[in-house]
Length: 116
Image 1 (cartoon, rainbow, N blue to C red):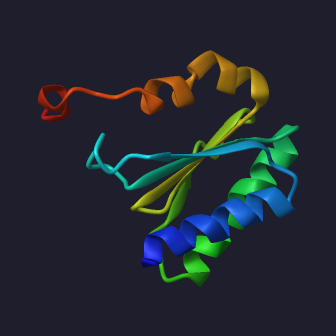
Image 2: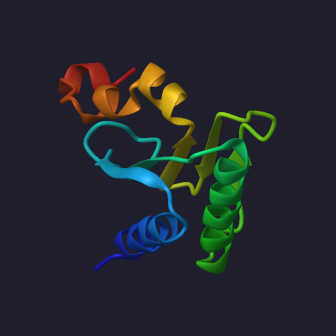
């Protein structure tokens, strides 16, 4: 297994152990150059979302991704933890439903639209 796949498993396990809800992973390798994988999860409250994002950040740093950071620090409904090749979105369930990232990124994108 490669390092990013192992890290993806660590992040999913961390989210699961800390009671994140509806955790999904989307393979972005053939869809975008921004990352290899996107993980989306829901938290139950603003504190839960904050705690999950901090734990994910810690796992990234423990695994050698020092330039990892949390986006949306001022938001109570959404956080993005940028792990370079692995992006983690943590949403309040209502915001997650509104943005529908799973639907947007799970659909196949024609190759000619990838080059933008």
